[in-house]
Image 1 (cartoon, rainbow, N blue to C red):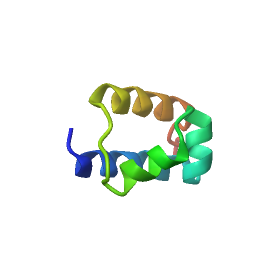
Image 2 (image 1 turned 90 degrees about the vertical axis):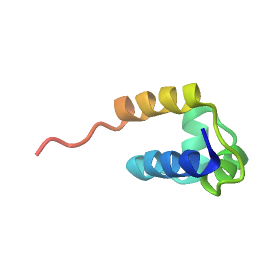
Image 3 (image 1 turned 90 degrees about the horizontal axis):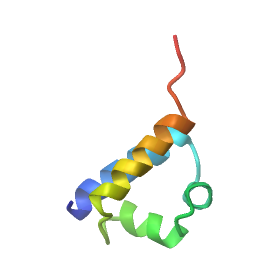
Image 4 (image 1 turned 60 degrees about the vertical axis):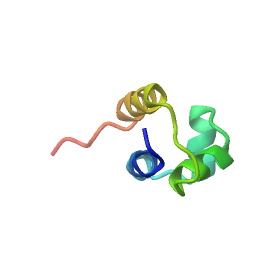
Length: 66
């Protein structure tokens, strides 16, 4: 997975939570620097990790029912 795709996914997931990079990292046991590197497109995350992180975020922060 390329850096740009990783950045988009991580930004979207973190936006869904409303958490700062520090709090997001603390919650999911990922160093803040790693979160920042992904969001700024400096590094890419393994595809399996993004899949697992997305599942965790969706479970922890379900969309509100209207």
